[in-house]
Length: 192
Image (cartoon, one colour):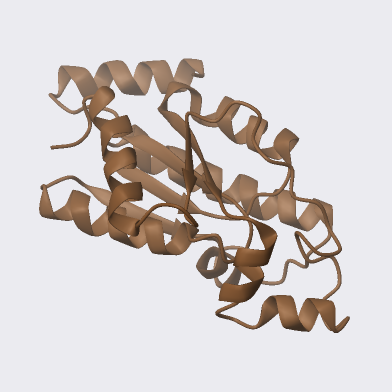
C-alpha cells in the first residue's frame, strides 16, 4: 500500500467507510472468467455490497481503445484495469476483474499496485475445454492464422504460481465457483 493509500484508508475509516477488494480473475479465453464475474456481481449486489465488474473485453473497447495485442499493449491494458480496480476498492467497492492477464510479471505489478486488497484467482480450465467452449470463435480464428499472438495458441499464458484461489471451471458449477469466491471475501470481512 502506498503512502497515499494509507492516508486515504485512514480517512475512510474515520468516516466509517471500509476498503473494498480487487478480485482478479485470470485465465485463458473461454475459461469462464466473465461468467464467474457476473455471477459473483449478482450475488454481492443481492447482499447489499457495492460491486463493479471490469471485463477485459469491455475495457479494451473503451479505456484501452486503440491498443493492439503486443506484450506492451497487453500489459498497458492490464495495468489500466488494475489502476481503476484499485481506485474502486479504495472507496469500498469490490472490483471484480475478468481479464486473461497472461503474464506473471504484469499480474505481480497489479498486486503491488493494489496491495492487500488484491485477491488473485486462477480461473482454470484445460485448453481443450476452452477451445470447445469458444463462444466468440477466437480459437478457431487463431488456429486458422487469422489472429496473431493469441493466448494459449501462439502466445503463452503463465499460470499463477501462488494465487489465493483456483477455480477449475471444468469441474465445478458456476454456483460452486461463486461460493468459493464469497468464502474468500468473507474471510476479509467483505461479503454477507
